[in-house]
Length: 163
Image (tube, rainbow, N blue to C red; front, side, top):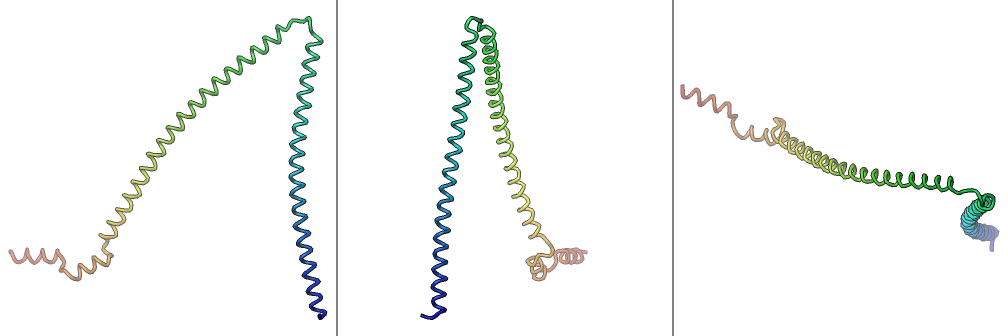
């Protein structure tokens, strides 16, 4: 074994090891990302649970502090909120139906618009075709003119011969 082949073998071995290490590093990085995502989810759940716990304890304190106080104002507030929620639901339903109607009208308008544009494009294509056929620069017309005598010349000959 020569020195160059040993260097090449050593270099290839090092490169293979580096690729293996990079692959392992990427795999670990992906697993760390997955763990981090799971940790974030757990943290959000924990915060949510702590918030519910605080709300529960504040409600329990409210109930324990004022057992003899009337709950009338609280009930009135809740009833007003429920009424507002119901009004918002009705308004939301009305807005959705209005949106559906507008969407239907817009679809109909766009269908008609597309039809008109398509008709316009077909008309343009026909006009372009007719213009290209009738154009004096058209090779076919030049061929016809060279093959057949000009009709105006024929007409003047016929007029002159009748005189």
